[in-house]
Length: 326
Ligand code: DAH
Image (tube, rainbow, N blue to C red; front, side, top):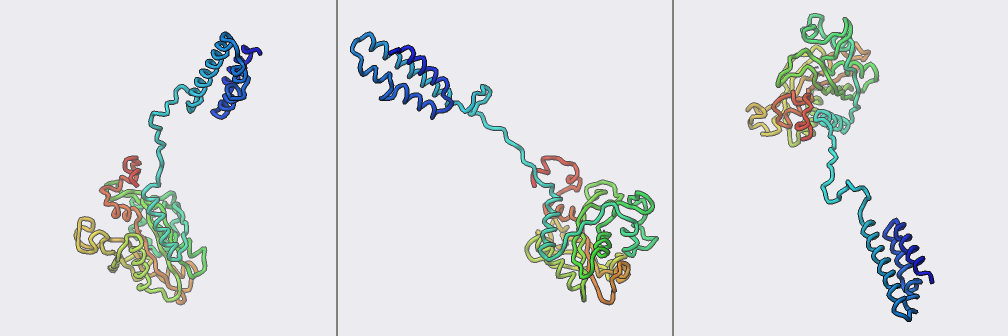
């Protein structure tokens, strides 16, 4: 028997083994009980050829052990060290305003409302005229409102979505519209020239202020939890009659008075009212048949209050240390 050829073939097979399983096959084939080497060893009669065969066996065993150690490395990449901690892949998260906005949308959808998208760039007609806003109303002043041209503004509130929704749908209408609004405010801790509102509009037969109050309360409890009382104060908006501003009992102290509610027990929510008959008639609804309520409130302020934030500018600075907390 050509024992040298046996050794060469065994070592070549070992080198070619690509996995522990393949290597095990080679081991059985070259050193197993029925391998030519073992059979030859069993038949050995003289010391010299016995020693030669044993030397081959040893070299093959060494070869197997060395290849086994090599295959045990997870990769042949010499720069890969499996004992080092891995790189952490940073995970993104939604901006706090986006999260708040989606929660609000969920609450409205849960109450049977449709989410309606308005336009950030809208007509003066939709933003003011159709909302019954007098020619001399101060909100039309270019020192307060961003005009793109004489007939076009960056919307100053989400209320023009009411007009768009009513023009697009037949009553009854139950819609909520959320998004950015723009005002020429000087940036400080409590004012940003861009902020977010949520507009609610319900038009149906016999819709009263009691419906408005009940819906607000359900909304406030869904967003802030617990049992919330709603307080309405008389106010004025051109597009509602009567108009109110509404507050809810503080979500932190339940009305007892604390720092969040400035010790009043109440948190201001926004403006609301019964949709003015002029607005209904303007979009072609018969005000004798249909009534509605509407409200608008600031999303930023809700997030601000819920998280006890010190400064609205945090929403815009994109500081990852702030953003990654939500
Ligand atoms: N648009 C008003 C604002 O930005 C808020 C508002 C008040 C919305 C009364 C309404 C409403 O829908 O009925 O200050």
